[in-house]
Length: 343
Image 1 (cartoon, rainbow, N blue to C red):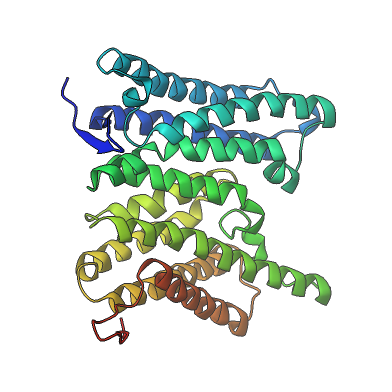
Image 2 (cartoon, one colour; image 1 turned 120 degrees about the vertical axis):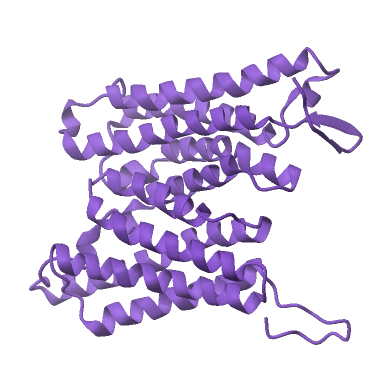
């Protein structure tokens, strides 16, 4: 078995092989899919019939155990070929091991939390301290391939899938402010109570801006690190959205996500190696395009009660947020004389 290596502070660490990274991705999908399956069950069945020991938790925790066994097992196998435990950790997977510990602590804590305080419902289930600890641990594990690719300074598809899974974790734990999780922000008939209508409008706009921040933050990070091949944007946004809509089975939102991903792929292939102002334009165009398709989907599926002033303004705000966020990842170029370029 061949291993590529890199050196950090005088030590050599093994770099995870591509086959190992694909195995990490597959088991990460099992674990993160279990998280969404558990949320689906919460919406389908009466919480009073549920305890910690459920089939849905079984899928989640078995996925975790399989993923943890794979990563720890790889470290143990590598230990036979190197001189220290530190060297045996595949490049980028040190934090994944830490994530395993956090997840274990969160799992035990979650069981005790349920026994002491009962089963969380609605937003409680997303903001429970033990659930957030599980989320942090899961995020560190599924991004092992991302850190590995960063160490190798080369793009790998497992890294892209790892980012998609990380985005799905972000989206899951902010489902209370996610238009794909809760389309009722804008769908159906306008509430008769003006105060309720205004509250829902504010929540909807806030949800659009929050998800734009998370989605484009991950997207711009990927564009900042690698030259992405065609299909990367579709996988990144499509996979994370697929998991998100599965909880409420809102499959009718998927065409908008995949169309946006395909358009993003076309634009990325044309723009990512040119001037930075085109990447800023990309960061503006993508949220405008997606949410335009989103509102069109809502209008066709259940009716859109938001007036053009609100949904049109939401598109502009989402685009402006994306444009501003691009400056965090692609700073303006400064010439030798100290002047700042327009890009």
